[in-house]
Amino acid sequence: MSEVRAKKDVAIIGAGPVGIFSVFALGMAGLATCVIEGMDKIGGQCSSLYPEKPIYDIPALPTVTGGGLIERLEEQAKPFKPEYILSRRVMSLTKNVDDDFELMLQTQEKVVARALLIAAGAGAFVPNRPPLPNIDRFEGKTVLYFIEESAQFSGKDVVIAGGGDSALDWALILKDIAKSVTLIHRRATFRAHESTQAALQEAIQNGTIVVKAPFVLHGVEGEGNELSQVIIKDFDDKQESLKADYLLPFFGIATDLGPLATWGIDLEGKRIIVNPTTMQTSLKGVYAVGDVNTYQNKRKLIAVGFSEAMYAAQDIYKYVYPDKVFRSAYSTAVGVPGVE
Image (cartoon, rainbow, N blue to C red; front, side, top):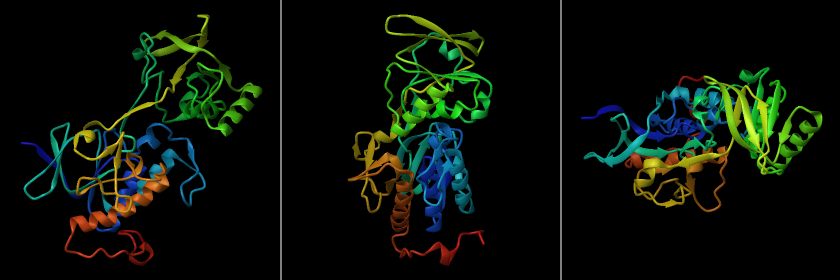
């Protein structure tokens, strides 16, 4: 018999920024929550992909890093005492005799909830790995797909591979930290935002970033898990050896809804179709907010996800407590538990 890990009004799947803000939105409605996250920390892509990258479109915060945003959201949610269940994936969804949802985790633990809110972003994400011999020896040590602290590259020779926003953003961030930054791309043109490309051209002219294009990764060399050389080649098979303490391949992220896609919820591609006024899915009692959902004129922005969480909280309250009247109130009038 499975152990019941948590029993709450609402189980939230996904601990990205929208998932964490949903704790606040649901808490203000008087609903107790737990948050189930497949990674070993909260924050989603903000923590794993761009913790030090500035974000400019969060209301009242002219600029905030991904990591900084998660810290503020965690503090905002704290008065509602959410239970974070980390390093767990939901494998199946059923209903019991009391009409509660039962979510079975891969650890054979069970979470019971009156309603379910999916805030899974783009779903589970894994990096697209370059197909290089022996690269697994260095992965997680000197070949990195996710960066938490830029300070680790201080005084190091860094090779970055890729032509999109992530590759160029990190090249620009590390040019003032690392000993050297070399950017490798298979084409002479890049896919990043125009302003980012302009900043890259300026860095190239200043000599703070070296670009090798068109080149592709060909091999990695080193002792143990310590990288020493990155081998690249052009399309005439001419090879070059680059001194490298770190290799940062940014070839995109593969996403997958995983078991969520088998629950009978209406989908459009890899997105969950919702009612845009309630965020309810085709399955009664199951809601979806943030990048994981879709509807007409959907905008994939964190700020939009925050708004969706407030819409969802109102309808979830009505679902959980059908005999009660939802009374909307301003936080300035009712306050927040434990906050003066």
